[in-house]
Length: 105
Image (cartoon, rainbow, N blue to C red; front, side):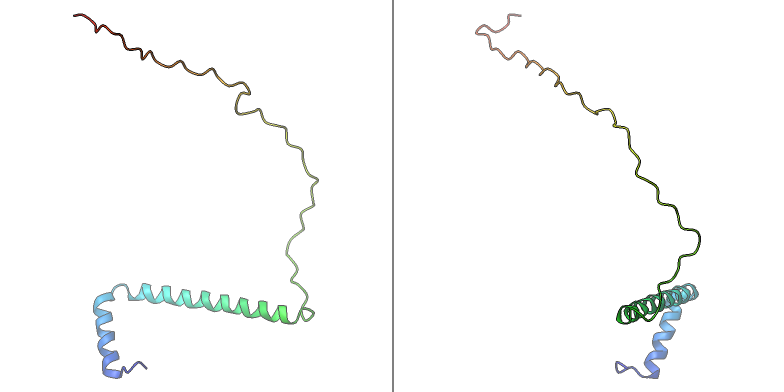
């Protein structure tokens, strides 16, 4: 196992306890939940592949509860336009004429 013997694993365990002592129970709980979710996902994939390989073997699972009735499509009233069709007049540019005579004080 990666060339690690019991003495090396013991030293690594002691270092882990020293570094993560208070957080180890939370980390173990999180790791356990992650492993369980991973196994559930893998089981779901396996059953999905099995169902695809044998399509006539098992009937599809029935949904629980009453089925919702299909409603006919409904008409939606048109909304008012967001913008006017007539564009606003363009603004006049500022006066940029240069006079030959500078202003007198």
